[in-house]
Length: 375
Length: 163
Image (cartoon, rainbow over all chains, first blue to last red; front, side, top):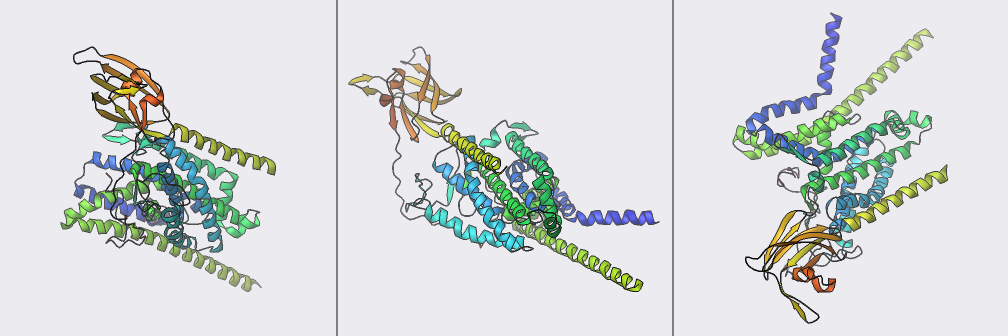
């Protein structure tokens, strides 16, 4: 009898822990037949979007490991990547060398922004996510625009009129990256079931996954995990908590910069003032859809999240049109779900935390009572 | 220990700078414009052949009759092409492999093919392509609004329009 109860409890726990991915699997299972898209089309779309997005989402894993939650500050890295890619486009460095150079150029900018973000997050401990989110507005709406709209063309030389605004300084709304477009994706690519497999991009993603696995086993990785579990215990153990947290944010920002460059080379143009604005939201939503939480995320969550989240993005408008006769409903639906999944994850995290705190309090009260009784 | 760490860090930065410098050289892109027009050099004129086919990396990028222009792109400073030249209508075609050293700082390069075929120096076959200035009436309006006011709260699929 108790075994049956245990099994039921386990199943309930499994359901509770994986409620978001299960919900998305259900949504996709209903929407795919309704959308009328062929499997090969969906496969092609998903493979393309995996190559485009996974690196960006992987950059979120390290701060989660260090207990800093979902790094909304990854947008800063995306901005660094954009600044680097504007410079590379102006210098006319094309193809893979252009991508590599953009990645190298993005590093110092990402490190500086990551350092700033990390220091700020150390000051606002426990409120890292909202700090990161608001920091995006400060850097994206202030610093980034100052650099791109006023410093580029005046202090930072921009030669090409196709990039520069007609007034002589500032960058145009869209920067064409035609000479860089899919240079990574096309290298060693092959066709499988009618879909182009971007082999080099997947090799880069695999290398990043291996790096994360290796990094977890290093001294710094172990320190981050210790800091993520309990900062006070980690400090008592001699770990420099603040420094470790800053490093985790710097790493995440640098990788986000690389991810943004991979993303932009796939797309082939840069919407200068808007490309980064929603990237953090999309990546975080995809990671949460994959079953990650604020305090726990794995590489598997990244892959599952990209597949499910983007599958929903692809099929929802058509499915919405099939159900209601209005494709706008599908559009609203997917936007609603994107925001909702972040909200649900944050609410679940807070509930869990409060429940754990309550349980700990109960245990403490019981222990005190028992102690008092004995005395 | 600290010195060793510092040295490793400096070495890593130097390696990155070196890779960046190499990328800047090997990744410099150029647009090449091929002209099949009569070249004049030192008072001697070199007639344009009837037809020239330009092959770059095994792919035909231009088929030029007299007074025609074609274009191609190239990454790096050492440009290689194969020219299939037909001197006159109905004549026999002959192939030439040509290597040119491209100037780093020039985006658009006009290559005069008859000058190249006659083995003339760079100043005979090279000319910088300067695009005609485009009259832009109004200053482009820059949209820097982070708080998008669209119906989807800025969460529309950014990738949908691309494919």
